[in-house]
Length: 177
Image (cartoon, rainbow, N blue to C red; front, side, top):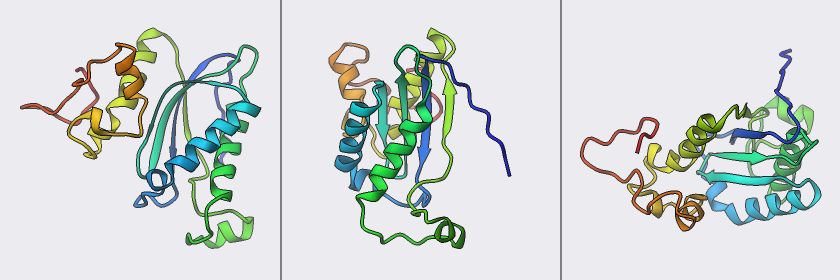
């Protein structure tokens, strides 16, 4: 069995990628209201700051800053995943292993976490999060994707509304927009 070593720095900022078990599913955008409610309830019990977030059909990316003295993002993800899954009807297929463990077949068991190291690393991940709907071809203009903190960043003046818009020669690589 693999042993995962995670960077745990109290009060730090982390980038996360969390995937659905079925990567062909659109469950997250179909139930985005439930996901928002679950995150909101989790933040009441286990506070954290959301710096950026994007929800795509089958995965999400986010930047969180944890409170000083707190490095426990694992509990937060457990509560979010469990709370979201527990409020959905049991219609998903499950593997034998998932049935044996009493698990739902909603989320991949693990997630990707990255400790943000400096301002450049923060900005790179902040941009990557907001660029993702365009990268995956869900929209041709980021302003058109409703499930993103991009709109908040535009209101704050961090991005112009047409940031990374489709234009001649545009590619889906990481942004330099």
